Length: 97
Image (cartoon, rainbow, N blue to C red; front, side, top):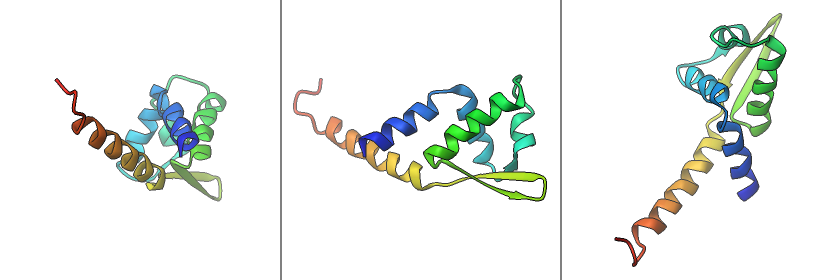
């Protein structure tokens, strides 16, 4: 699980990728819609999407000339489980101040 966590947090460390996730949290969107608010070349933006897709956070489907992206919640659920476990450990530490 650690390598999955490393990959997830590495992907989420970038503000552009976090912005994409925030947009997709409202629903599926085309690549052009996701790219529009970012002041970067499309190939650069596509590298960000590729990182999110390789992590499994984002999935995309191409219909004709339009690629539509959506969130896959599975990696988020795994991370949430790990964070809950860490929180449990910290809340039950005997040396808490």
